[in-house]
Length: 178
Image (cartoon, rainbow, N blue to C red; front, side, top):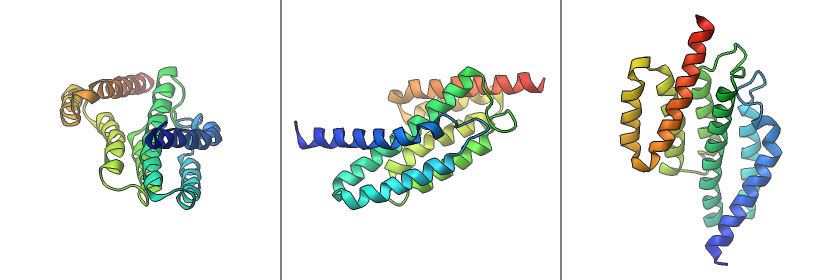
């Protein structure tokens, strides 16, 4: 096994430990008990421990992977809640403002240790969802095309999934208001 493969394994194991501890909080995202703040604080605590215990190269590798996993976890939970038709927040709706606030918390959680595109690109995914949620319904296709073009063909399926989730969220909100 190469050093790189070893580092990859180590990153995966450490991230699994952290999210194993956070599983209860993750399952409550987008419900009445939504608490991304606790998740962010726990991640910051673990990061401080990892920073003192790992060489800088491996710590930076871990941080990039950790951030990607955090965004994936967040979006997976968002899709899960939307697909199940469960309550989205205390008022029963999932609003762009709360997702925008979550994006800020995630950015702040990692910005001390992750810089530049490694931080900006994953956070941009959440910002794209907010943009899709806030736009006029007739503009979703146009905005999705713009996002897909900006991100490149390899992200086309991710953009499609975002559009699907946002469309379902918006349809549910129209039903509850109508």
